[in-house]
Length: 93
Image (cartoon, rainbow, N blue to C red; front, side):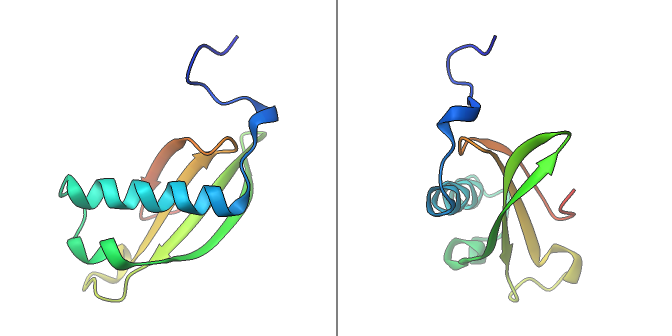
């Protein structure tokens, strides 16, 4: 019963597309000044498929050594299996 704009299991994107979409999320956060501008040049460290509440999701991890607060050097971007933005945080949870 998903409406327009919702991801369906059969529209799964590959790892490359998931990484590209996650990088766009980072760029958007930089442009909106939600995170430091140094994140604009950071490449993804890893992309993996995770099961969250019984649903597959993409998790893309970015690491930025230019950030002085150690607990904010790693950004986790969560996407649906279809490549749509879910959330971003520093905890990975």
